Amino acid sequence: CRDRVISPSLLAADFSRIRDEVTRAIHSGADWIHLDVMDGHFVDNISFGPAVVQAVHETNDIYLDVHLMVSRPDHFLPRFIAAGSDLITVHVEADHDVAATLRAIREAGCKAGLALNPATPFEAVVPYLDQIDLLLCMTVVPGFGGQAFMDEVLPKIEAAAQWRDEHGLAYHIEVDGGIDALTAARCAKAGANVMVAGSSTFRAPDMAQAVKQIREA
Ligand code: DX5
Ligand code: ZN
Image (cartoon, rainbow, N blue to C red; front, side, top):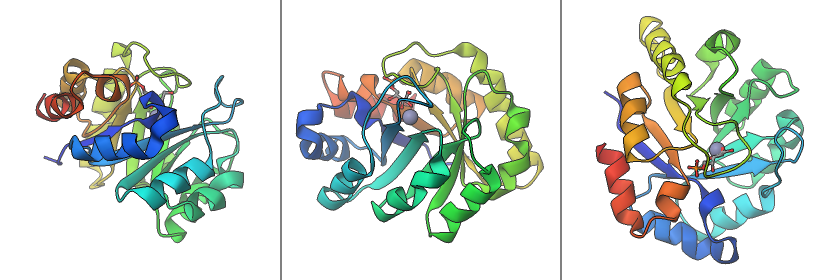
């Protein structure tokens, strides 16, 4: 069984104090920091870009899990690599040569992740599964924090775990959107091991307790 990884999403943090917020996450037991990059085109929201990723990289020592919700991940890739990303996740629905982008991420020495939206079937990512370190199953329609977890994604997580085990692959399965201790437990049962959680961690009264509960759920 893979170790569970907790990746608090910076989107739910206080943006006026980003360095302190990342420090708070680290002290609360976070394994990774999840950075949601939104371009106002692939999703209906704009968050932050490579400069913020770089600022986090320079002020704190933690694994940077960068989720690119942008239409042209291939175009912006070099800037996120240079910013200090450890793992870069791109969407299968975006406008790019997916295999080429995944190759470019790995050639730069980063880990490669592939994401799919709730409406996208598992079959869409199958051609790329031997090229990835992580599969991100979105459990909300991406764009905003604080949305409700979508149960209908659970069978896709099970399919992804079954495929991985049957084909001798080793990718992590990450879930993102509406994750708290309750939904994390259901996702873990389905086969996910990397839990992205924004509102339920950064906005909890006790972040360390929230991280612990998601880890032990
Ligand atoms: C959704 C983002 C998520 C978001 C999760 O578009 O990809 O990472 O920050 O936020 P919560 O945990 O609040 O649903
Ligand atoms: Zn995300």
